[in-house]
Image (cartoon, rainbow, N blue to C red):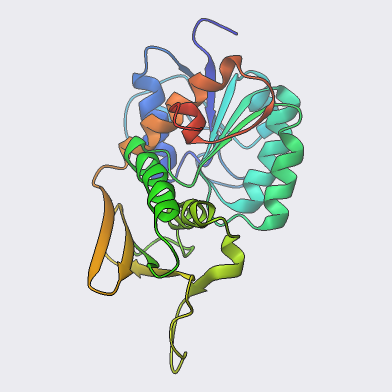
Amino acid sequence: MTEKPGVVVTGVSGRMGQMLAREVQKSDRLTLVGALEREGHDWVGRDLGICMGGTENGVMVTDDALEAFAKAQAVIDFTAPAATVAFAELAAQARAVHVIGTTGLSPEDLHKIHVAARHAVIVRAGNMSLGVNLLTKVTQQVAAALDADWDIEIVESHHNQKVDAPSGTALMLGEAAAEGRGVALDEVSDRGRDGITGKRERGHIGFHAIRGGDVVGEHEVIFATAGERIVLKHIASDRALFARGALKAALWGQDKAPGEYDMLDVLGLED
């Protein structure tokens, strides 16, 4: 490993991609060695600093993932499922730590990522923030302490440009609640209730998605029973917190054995 591991940011023209690139450039522990965009994008072949409205920084935007990854020790990826799956294979070939913040991954996508993790470190999380990962841990513990007479509902709010629902964070919280209960989430998940749905199923976990304005991210886990409620909530007001978590994951993964990890591992919160 180099003294300052080199990082490639994928989808660099996006809101999160630009945030990640700026945070890497500010870091005294990492260095930005590559910026990736899709083929045909008008940033390709241009200096990243100029593209982001600043001065030249010497990092040229490329659409050649294999070439970019070959000179990196870490790849930070908040893109789309199909792109992330392709990047996982290429990052594994390069033996680069692949930090995945992409949401909306299907079971098939997750299987392909699992295969790639046999050869390299992959850190994947629906949310990279310390607060959300603490919330996840607490959600699991509360769910384990309460029986199915306590209904669990998860409410998430995001900006109006988010394309997937429920959010990756909401699903992460749902998985934590299900694990606490000792059940499989896909067997107890209720989503998008509409019309005459009948009464709520005992033991199910409900999801509700709100989209509007420029909301960065709000997540609420509600435990409700007759006469009382417990409400756990996290509010994100600055997108940079996700970027800082991703950088922490990229550094943490440098000396780890190949495999799949999450932010609970990175933060030392895993049992």
